[in-house]
Structures are given as C-alpha cells and as structure tokens.
Length: 366
Image (cartoon, rainbow, N blue to C red):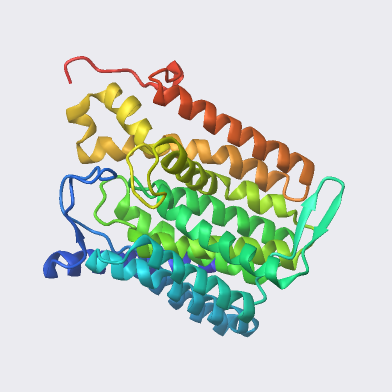
C-alpha cells in the first residue's frame, strides 16, 4: 500500500494547488450551466486530470527507485497514457476538441501500447475452452477499440461529483487484488498508484465539487483501467478474460447503450451529448423528487445523493468479478445478470415507474 499512500498524498496536495491556481488565473473553469449534462451552479476548475497524472508520475518514479524492474513497463505505459489524455486536457482548457479527435488520440495511445508493451487481446475464454486470436488484422482493431472504448466510457459516466472516481477506484482496487493473487507486481503497483491518485483528487471533488475530473482525467483513468485489465488478463492465463469484461461492464455497457439509444431510438449522432444517461435519470426522477427541485440543485445535496446510487450499482459487477476472477462460466452469468438489471432499471425509471426502494423519505416543506 506504499504506492497508494504516496500517490494519495501527492495528488491531494497537487489538486489543492491546481484549484487555487485555476481560481486565481480563471483558467480551465467550467462555467457552462445550461448544457444537457450540466448540473453545477458555479464556475469550477475542470482539470482534475493534471494533478492525477502528475501524482501518478511522481509515485511511479519513487516506485521505480524501489523496484527498478518496473521501469521498462511503467515508463512507456505512462507515456501512452499522456497521449490518451492530451486531447481531453486541451478540451478542458479550450472546449474546442471534438469527441472524434479525442477518441482518435486514445486509439493512437492504445496502438502504441500494443507495440511497446505487447498489450494485445489474443484470446477469449469460453466455458468449453479458449478462442485464440492470432491474425493481426483481427487482434489490432479489437485491442485498440477495446482500450479506447473504456477510456471513452469512463468519460461518459463522469456526470456527477465522485461518480466516475469512486467507480474507478473500486475497479482499480479489484485489479490490484487479482494481480496480488497471481503475483503480477507491475499491475499491482500501477493499479494502486492510479487508485491512490484518484482518491487524493476525490477529497476535493466529493461532495462539494471544488474541482472536476474533466475530460483529461477521465481519459487518463479510463485508459489506465483498460490497459491494466488487458495486461493482467493476457499476462496471466489463469485470469479469465471475462473478469475484465465484468469488471468494466458498467461504463462499457453505459456507452454501448447510449450509442444505441442516440442512433436507433432518437435518430441522432452517437457523439451528440444528451441528458438521459442512467445517472442523469436517477438525479432528475429520484433525487429531485426526494429532496425537491430547489434543494436537489444545491451543491451538496445534488451530488451527495446521486452518485452513491451508481456506486452501489457498479458493485454488482465489481464484487463478483473480484470473487470469481478465474471462473469463466460464473463471470458470464453475472455479466448477463448485470445487463438485464441495467435494462430493467433504466426502463422503469424512464417510464416514471421507479422502484419504491430507490426513494429516500421526502421531507415536507423543505
């Protein structure tokens, strides 16, 4: 846990510094209050990815000094991650980088990791055996799309303070646990570093929201999640590929379902943002009803009462993935169960038939 602690402290201090500098200079502040996915009511720095990345680099340097064998793996991974987050950071500062260009940068980063680290999807585990993927024209696009897709998926679920951060921390700690079981020190240390940095950022992001993760932060964390999950599974055949699938299924399925909804239900571009993600619906149709519209838009209540719904929901995937990390059949079962649960819950909420147990007690006159 040394890596987690160093990363946590480094990021907590760096994030505080970034908050103060951003307010003083008026740079990279999110003051768009009218967007379909916006729920804040004052200008907030949206460059949380900067201190998270810097804290990871600092902790990485310390870790390499303690364990030099990590260097040949960690340096190229962080270099690729820098490319993945570059478009997001520029977008956070300027607001002028299209989703397509950001996605292309994450794909380029995944392609570089493919060649520099050998991070490639070469097998798919099945209950009755293993499906080997040998042809480069299949392996390369599958690998690139999978990693870039996860990076984009974390950005998609980054809708409320603490939502993407806590979900990502849970996933990273699961990766660290499984890496410990198979004695993969590189994945173990790196997952703890990113988790620690994200936790250091979180103390300033939740519940008050003094800083946002931003596109850069979401792309960095998502890219690291995708690469670490891929490396863990491919370097250790005893870990089922369905472990990675179930672990990452919440952000991944949210993205796939959103693209389907926009293209085939609403007839719009899949890149066009909308305000009917699962987390947005929970805010509008559960949290607002519970505490009232005026109170729901108050900074503390808005995020403190919305994100935990999704934290608990994501654990429906993270916990069984962590427990049954080498049992392909069980992992497939829980993957299907999660998808069914997601679709059922979404359909109930969107039709104004939300389950009663989702509602907290509504206070009268407040």
